Length: 229
Image (cartoon, rainbow, N blue to C red; front, side, top):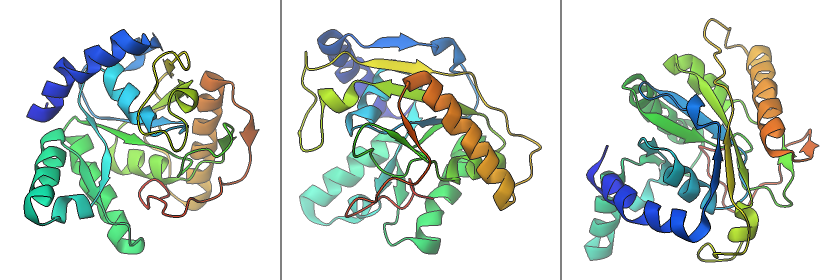
C-alpha cells in the first residue's frame, strides 16, 4: 500500500468513521488478495472518500493527468500526493489519450491492485441510476479480474453537488458490496460487453434501490473521459 495512502488509512479514515459511522454490508465480498474492479453508482464526490474509508485494501482511483504535470511548488506537491496515493493518471482530451488510463489500470489489476470505475460516467444529476458504459466490463476481461458491484447510499445528501466537504449528520451513509461478477471467458464484442454491463447495472440497482433510467446520464461540463469509457 502506498505510503500516503497508508497515512490516510491511519488518520482520515478513522475520523470519517467516527464522524459519519457508515454502515457497511457485504464486506466479505471484497477479496483479501488479488486484483478486482469496484464498479458502483456515483452520487457524490464523497463516494471515493467513503469507499476508501471502508475497504481495508489500497484502491487505485483516477486523477487528471494535469495534476501530475504541474509546475512550481503547488505542482510538485500535487504530483507528490497523487503518486503517493497510487493514483492512475488520465488524459481529459479523450480518444486514445483517455484510453491510456485503461492501459495503466491493466498491469495494476494484474499485479493484485483494486481499481475503482463508475460505469455511469458521471455523477447522477437526480439520484437515479443511469445506463452504464461498457468500460468496466472491457477492463475486467482485459485484466482477467472480477467486478465487485458497489452501492453507495446517502453520499449525495452528505456532500451534495457544490458542497466542499461532507457534512456530518446530514445523512446516513451506507456502502454495500455485491457478489463478484466473473466475466472470464466471455467474448469482448460490442453486444457481449453491453450484456455484461447491463448485468452489472442490474446488480448495482439491487444494492441501492435506485430508480433505473435506461439511457446515459447527461454529461457534465467537463466529464472525466476514463469514467465514460
